[in-house]
Length: 294
Image (cartoon, rainbow, N blue to C red; front, side, top):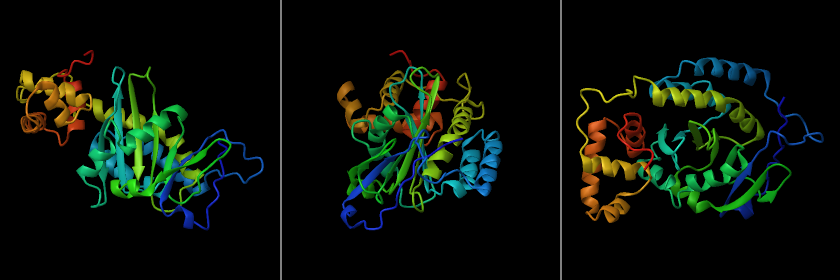
């Protein structure tokens, strides 16, 4: 039985016009003085159906359909970003899907930048707490028992087009594969029920994501015969891409122009038949094109 923190809705948000907030919710919070915030009967039924349906998620179209079905009833969102980190990796490799036209590749790339991306900044805090971590602009900044609210410039949230979002993950530095998810542009008031749902569904979502990146229909354990040869230079650039380096950083490291790096990256995406740098890094790792020990 999960006991979850009660989060009070702030009626007067005038002082929050230029601020957003981070809410961390604990499953250990003492609610002896508050109402039990457990799921309703309908929500529990939907959750059980989601668990069963998660077993059939084995590729990206399956995942998208799963997230657009009953999942929306418990956590209504427009953007999903997921990251995968193998045991020897320092950073997550990210992908995203969105049902809104406002969130574009540029927003995604800015959000997951290693140095100052808002998602990577959130991950650093989540990694210390290991609890669902919400960003929103409707709650006052304060410290509570087992969760906290901290101020953050709302212009950053607007610029990323994420609006509000929640971060949670599964696995640690000792896990063969760790996963992290971000659900953004969440509709309605964020609350402890959503945190409970995310804690309960995360192990099932983790297993689904692992199946997606390891299934034979996505990546073969050996390069297939139709895969065009990756050159030594492209392999070198892939190594830096996997480490999260930008084209400009790679160009400085290799003493070549950023345009040359961009052309190599485009060739890599075409040869690997992937859509973005994150997918390229994950697929190249599975195909043995990247030396994980470097």
